[in-house]
Image 1 (cartoon, rainbow, N blue to C red):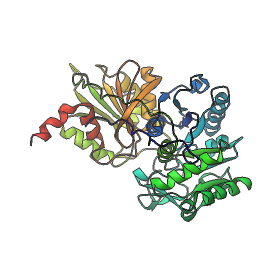
Image 2: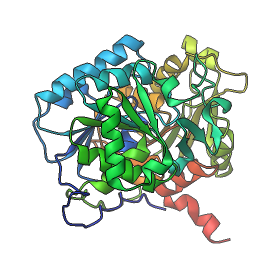
Image 3: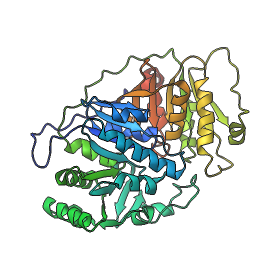
Length: 418
């Protein structure tokens, strides 16, 4: 299955509920989230790995910038957001959007506080219904289970927060219940305004895409002083609400089955074991890497006469991973991937792994082409290499298989004949 271009925006005339606005500037804290946002917005877009591009002069497209702050100390992450916002003031007018993790990981509190400076209010909506992440009574749920009762923070140093107000101790946050989100638009606008006038920031509940559409539309009606902060779900809603030119449709890139295809799996999610098993069933060469060896730089890939057509590099998490070691492991994994022979196309899971791999290769920009499935963004590098990025926590058991067959259609041929 080839990757699918982002769906065009609905063709509706400009109105109070669907305003024509400047293009978007979206700031992300990791690369997989940045790529997800770029596809979600749906308009002409540039995805940059260079923070200095925030001050660019071109305004004929959305600009999504990966600030790459997940691995930074907290104060430096907040400083990166402030610096980007100051630089944005020197560029063309853009609607501001802050991409955050739907499971509230990263330097959420510090970056949100920096993002809120000089704003009337920040509308905080991290729900991502397509991935089973919802917000009810101010509590993030994952497939119906409160976040703090899941293992989504297993690789973090701290425990998952119990609620959005707890996750954002530096901001006065007021939750907005579902019945208000689903009420008359004027009532939702009034509630957001009331919360802002009290010096706080609204955090609306959301369980469906329709809820997020209402949230995005309300924030836009209230004007640029109300900044948006959310996951890819709110970015999708923003793309549906805004009226601007749609992104140009891309023809699927021709299959290049002779080039190696390298999967670099930098996530400790338990589901990845089954995902990799689907690839090994296709004959993929799987190289599980000991995290201790990775951390000390003693890993060397086995020498082969030629690069296998399909290879998977992954971190062996069977013995558990030490919290806080993610960036070092991702950097080591990225360096190995960059040295892989044969100039392979890349499938990179986990935002840090994606970023460190592309940094090692000197790639500073991606052109998003579409999504293979939700969150699995197919992009092209300036020199024509194909790259798929996917958050580590996304995807069903067949996620990596679907990506492989989208990039290498011949892999699906045997199954199609049975």
